[in-house]
Amino acid sequence: VQLQASGGGLVQAGGSLRLSCASPRTILSVFWSVNEMGWYRQAPGKSRELVATITRNGDTNYADSVTGRFTISKDNAKKTLYLRMNSLKPEDTAVYYCTWRIDQDNYWGQGTLVTVSS
Image: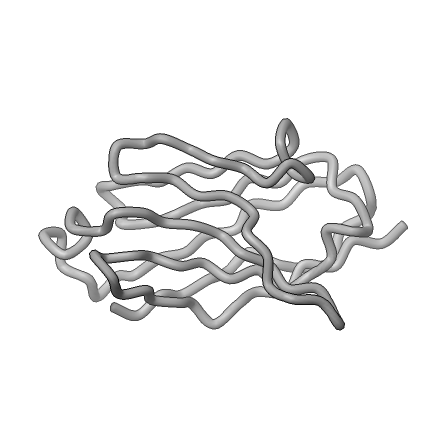
């Protein structure tokens, strides 16, 4: 499973971005075996932290710091995971990584940089 993350960039505080995580070469049967998808981020000098997750059934979970501002979703037909980020803050600046979990195996995308200017 190869994940391609995109959508990062430079945005002013209060702005919005939508991140995408696609795996075009993954066949549909493998996609349906994914137990959980998620977004993590790593800011300079900090550890990687959970941002949001979504299960196969669509149940979502968010870090307290992004609740109410970020929305995780997935498009099963396009085999794509999204993260809609609104009301961005400078402290949201980080490299964002997507991950898919199939049973005990975790697959990671290459990361996409989000920079929020004040």
